[in-house]
Amino acid sequence: MRALPLTLLLASPLVHAGAHCDIALKAGDSMMYDQRSVGLDAACKVYTIHLTHTGTMSVGDMGHNVVIARTQDVSAIANDGMTATLADDFIKPGDARVIAHTKTIGGGEKADASFPADRLKPGDAYSFFCSVPGHAELMVGQIVVK
Image (cartoon, rainbow, N blue to C red):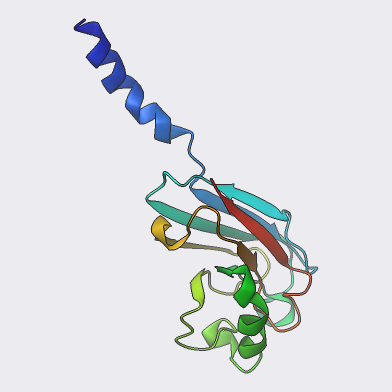
């Protein structure tokens, strides 16, 4: 009987060791992410976005970012971002519809951003997209929280 609690204690960290708490995306010198859908574990406390720009073009020529929002808000956020600047990562300052975002990066750069996992609810529809003007139509994907 004494071995069972010890076994449960030792096994409990393994539940979260394989959890999907990160979104790792790559984008290059075209308007495309390497994934169209990502899954996240609802048991996570924090989610982290990792963006790698695999191309060689500068941030001014072919920069990318990752923005996370409810799917129903993507078009409006992207439209509002067209009047924002690179310094604002093409996101309207103070836009409460944005759940999280990375900075906008160019070729050879990386960017990370973390946010509380409770901002995403299982069963709701969320998307990731690039808010650089003109990119959101092609650079968009689905987030599934389970």
